[in-house]
Image 1: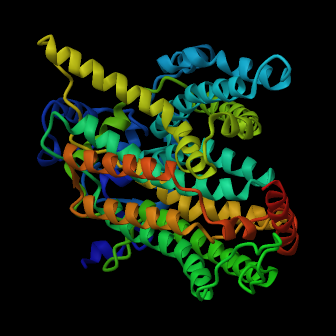
Image 2: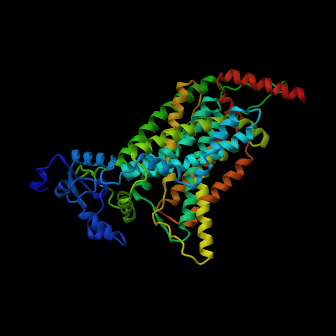
Image 3: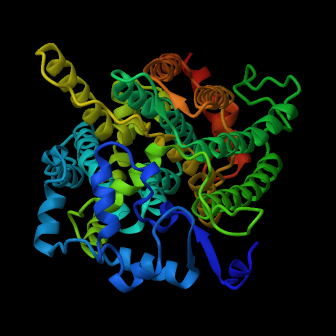
Length: 526
């Protein structure tokens, strides 16, 4: 370390990507972006004044104080150097951000169908709510992308991940409040495997058809393997604990319709599982928070300064640079208001959807396990799925007509895997702790079959993303496994003892009494 370095103890060495500036090093500028980067290096007002730029060389290894870095972040958040977007223009752009917004009128119709139940059937209410949530999901994507312009790639990605989980979280909380704990657990597993298999599989297949391979962020991919594994193992422990207690005991009714006595299905066992699950919930939350801090501010052990991962692909650096050059379509305050309104609409619409579930299951003869594992989680994917299908069909038609087809980016979007990790490490613990506050006996004891599905999905995703590269064949593999799960789950009836353990809001003794009464009634009918 030189004497000049020692004279600046309060400063940190940052890369241009960490500062959010475009690179000015010639060796890091590729293709059509070279002119833009050259222009940016000479700009006097990008995100700071000309005097600030005169003092800081925006190249790799820029030395800058923490106070200055915070000031530059606040300037970016306020949109300094960007085109000012008025309120009227922001509202117009939000309203026309996606062609899926043509389904927005379904929301008031869904609410009307809920309140006028004598006129509209529960099936109509469910369908309207399903359709109404689609444009809201598209609005979350658009709002997250707009905020990423002001927040930067790291915080922007975290915001988009959180917004994309809003619908699933709203459904889970409403199911918890309604004491639909068995359906809640199936939905949790269904959401996770959907984000691990269906969403990335569709993206890898649709975007990778015309290029040899796509690249994932190596740092995030390596960490995601560990995060996903600890999340699945934390869910597996209570399930294995319960299985170890079952030493060949078979639950059922005797000739009189009474449930056979079992020390396994008891309030004491459920109490142990509740304590275990709530403790795990705190631990998983700490792990997730620590992972976000690490990804946002990775620290170099040798120098103690903040630096980016040395193996970050050039495509990811270029994406950050393009994000900084992108002009917003909405001002930050208007964007926040739009997102808050959409969260409220999604929550209420999800509430009406949940109230119509029972009638839809009975009329469609759909088992609860398939309903929770496949149908309910698919609501969050409906918007993205339609956009992907339209893009795929459009590309196919243009190719057949001999027209030029847009070549996708070689940077694979593995954000769906981040969605699954956030749901399993953050939102699942939040739901458990919320159930504790509401006196709902929800635990991490999951169905054995569902647990096996989750372990298989985790194993497959970790294998496919191990080299931080993907292609369309690997996307096809993910989709194939998800379709296999959907087919096998259609015939699955679930574990009867798990339903007893999740009996809500009464005790296990009450659930056994209810089951005995039901069994006696069935025998009487026979």
